[in-house]
Length: 253
Image 1: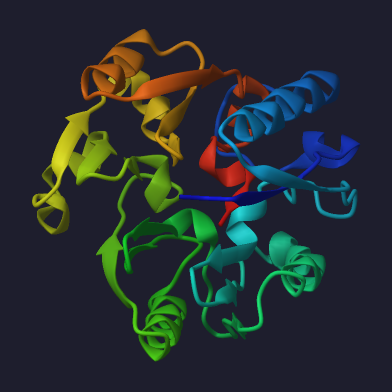
Image 2: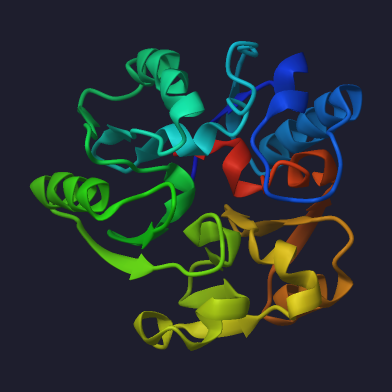
């Protein structure tokens, strides 16, 4: 169960964020409204949400999940693979000092972004991507083992981050789409398959027995609800324009 979340408001510079999507430029006012609704949804799941102010210097900094990995025993500050995002981590580290005694860090030449890490109990799957390299993944695994946890790597071929295509919903249920449906490392899970035309909905988040899903994906919604989950739909279409999803927008612990 989660008790807190940290989010960061999008700044007006969001329109200059990194993107491989061909969905247009985000509308700042709409993004701000969507972010507020996202925050309310987290609160409705029983979380105390800490809202950090925007940082205009870093257009992608609202995707705060990439800056850290939070576990029960330690926080791990990442080293983002995108050069323009490396400065985002400083004030995230500062605020995490309020809640964690043990704060570890990934250092160069290792790179890691939190969107490439999926927690399953005390084990963490780490995607090797354009943003997360093997050196960074191995640093994270070494830190996890220091605190009695474990980790393993999964090579990615087609998506930006690991959690672009999979989400763990507890009780051994894994939402998956695309290349992840046949990954050998994932076959022990009960896979809830998301059709290719709704693959964006594979990025969803389990929060205290509810599942937050992006709005507008009825087949995915039905698949998740048929597995016994209560869902909350949230419009994050402005963040989708920057390759961002629901999990990217918060640190939950």
